[in-house]
Length: 191
Ligand SMILES: [Zn+2]
Image (cartoon, rainbow, N blue to C red):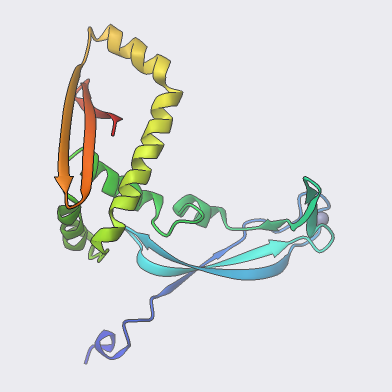
């Protein structure tokens, strides 16, 4: 019999992420383990798992006095920080994956849910899919804002661009999107 059928499915697998730093940046003393943090993460490649992060502190410089308040200066895992934003359980890769399906391929939330199951075996409640899609838009907006001059220049060089405006309703949710077709790529301009 397959072990997977016997073991309870409520226990997600756990992956460990240890602080990268070994020595304190100020005094070069060996860092000590400070505490362990757990977090549920969903990623397209790693699936659903529990991330265990091992934080470290310098025994001599545990407390840093930023803005008059004493707070613990701990070191965490860069790998985990690159995988998933703090305060979010959806990885950056999942956010981009969902965001491109939503705003480049114009998929409905329900369709994205089905595609994630089909392609990655990822079961994500539909109510949780719109959050990473919206966060993706925020990031795209930031990148656009940072690159307005470059984009404007390039658009002028190309002799203009096409703006497609579309909106759709999904339940109570209304989505209004402006897509700029530019060099064969669609660019979300506003939503
Ligand atoms: Zn130190």
